Length: 220
Picture 1: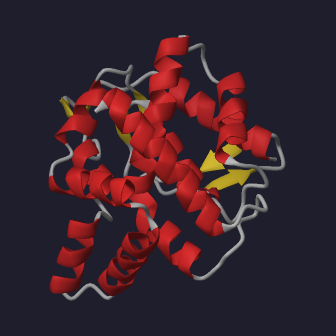
Picture 2 (picture 1 turned 180 degrees about the vertical axis):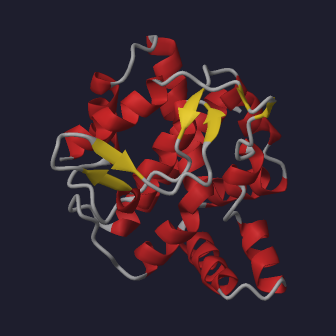
């Protein structure tokens, strides 16, 4: 089932990008706002605005700060204050049509062999690293394998990408994934959770953090 879903995602990413709708610019979800949707500063603003979920996001970032290493915390704090270096790195990669909210709850393998996607409110044009980062960090309770294996399966199904572009894509997935959902990794690690892949959440947080810091040294 996962192979089928990843192939369908690769098909979405290979689809032609519409240039306009009814003579107007297409209303894409802005990339910066998508990246920063649940960042620490956004979570604080949610709480200040009375959004109930803001407190949960802040609690997750507090757990992240308690459990992540200083260099990982510094990376997220730097991007939270100014994501321009990440945006510039992403801009160096080819754009594609992205779903924007790739979690398994939004994917439905149909009996006739087709695969349906719902919840397109964050559709955007950006490098596939953004979709793949969220796919990995939002589905740890569902995927029976680790991130590297999922990415290998995706690449096998996707349109060809040069080795250099793929290496950059993987690096930016590591950074983007932590920025998008480090709060959840903090909560899972503090709770002592075990992921569907069999990995302890604390080890998963350490794995992502180490790779994100290494990737930032190469790309940002």
